Image: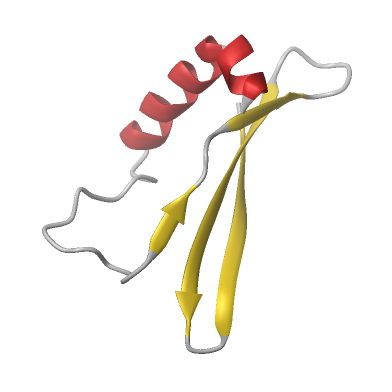
Length: 75
């Protein structure tokens, strides 16, 4: 997303912190879901604070149809 491209330091700071705290899984030898789409990261400044909220979209197809989740994280 354009917001992440304009603020790459926010994403660069977020990813290592999640890895260090064990919130990241993978890589996997085989896909855990048959179809998984990972959208781009976006960042939104928090109102009145010097911090950000990151977001990403994950989507997969299941027997009941498309399932999507928006993942939010705070920095």
